[in-house]
Length: 132
Image (cartoon, rainbow, N blue to C red; front, side, top):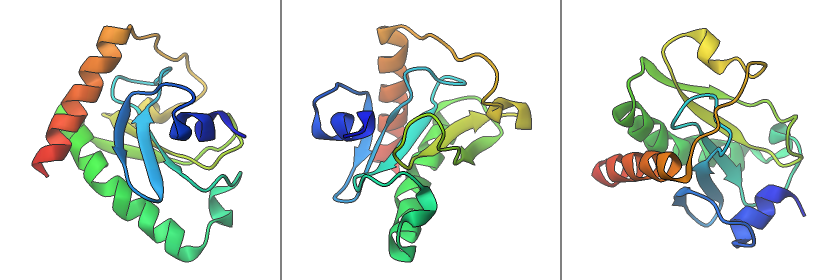
């Protein structure tokens, strides 16, 4: 069982942003920038492109309002999107508030945010999500 499956099942706590029957979105606790959110299918599959076409389409439909909420919550030009898939053997989509392409540079150091900073980001995104 992957760490993401443990987060989805509630075994490991997370800063949940949204959830439905197929997907779970939560803050990355070691973000590139504040507001960095992961969207994870509840089906545990290692490679994003091993998901069915319907599942992949549903993933983007689920992620769209979250991306819009991120854009409204943080100073950025847009919400960037990346599928890297090397860190955890469970498919996941990164949604990151960006102002330049370098903001999606996964080789640079990650932030270490406090619990209060993570809760603040969670509240900002959730509040905007409720308005969409």
